[in-house]
Image (cartoon, rainbow, N blue to C red; front, top):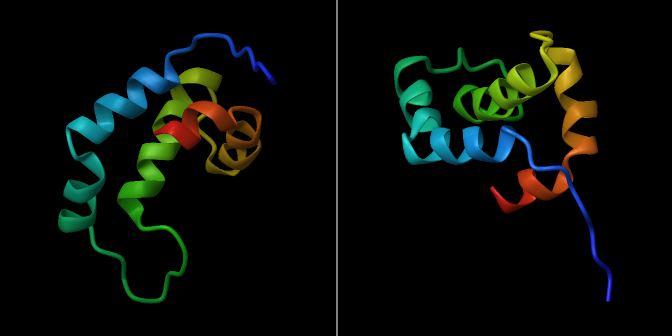
Length: 78
């Protein structure tokens, strides 16, 4: 049996709130991509970026991937 302990944080609550409010769908509907972009849609990127920005206090988008790698359990459950 493997037990993983993770500090309770604000990011799971914020992710759940953003998903409940369907923020990703609203952003994708009102701010469509220009067609040249690849990868994650803007709404899903925002749902990952906002909890990182609130939790780490760093608004730079380049810091989301390392933050996400450090918090895999709440992100995977969301």
